[in-house]
Length: 100
Image (cartoon, rainbow, N blue to C red; front, side, top):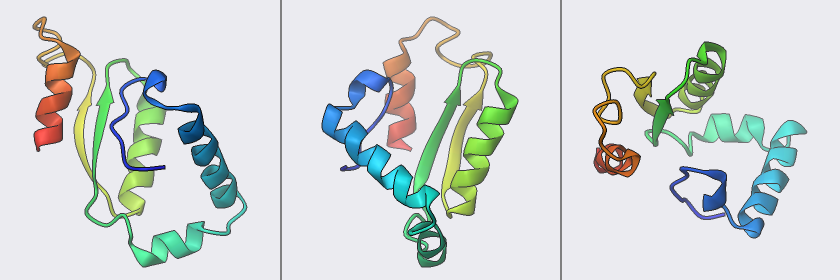
């Protein structure tokens, strides 16, 4: 699967989902996890973490996993204080974060 921006599940093709599931299966069975952590192939990758609903455990577990892989997290938790709350389109917020 190539790198892509994901906003909704409809952004994935059937092939993308199949490849993602195959990779997840590999990670689950420990065939890549240790090598991936050691290789640092995700070091300095930027991850946008945009949580519009309260979901502390999900947000923190996702962000912790990304940090453990060497990623940098940028985003927000909750719609308060965002441009979306002011009525701007979600796509504008996504484009702004993408530019960062």
